[in-house]
Image 1 (cartoon, rainbow, N blue to C red):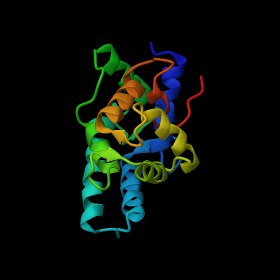
Image 2: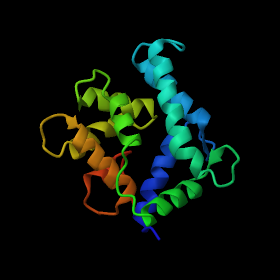
Image 3: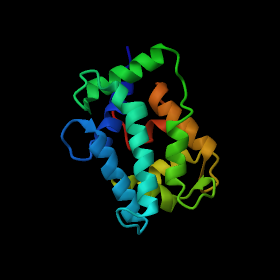
Length: 180
């Protein structure tokens, strides 16, 4: 059983992905986030960048979220999501070799191998997270204090967010502040 804090973190993530605020996460929510990223990068719907983002976000849906849809109704409730992560943790999963690296590459718009504060703010904006929270979260994830988030820092923070319940882990705030 996950702690209340761990469940709260996962429910924050679910809420962030619930773009249409229906209480459910579906494929359409991921498609909207792809549109948001494209617009923030000055790209029109249907552009090569938009199509690439759409492909990546659809892959995230099919690979990670659709399997969590226990009711097979095309949507994932927060309870279904928490149950799927609980099952992964119970099975010994402690990191992710696909989702987090793909997300890093999406956020790292200039391909520098580092996420700048501007890129982090764009990430928050694309996901509908209050951009005013970005500088604090960015500072927490930039554990070596060099002014950017490396791939290693990002992957470590993401793994700590999803798979661990360490009260002091910088990754706890990966998707914004956590209470509980």
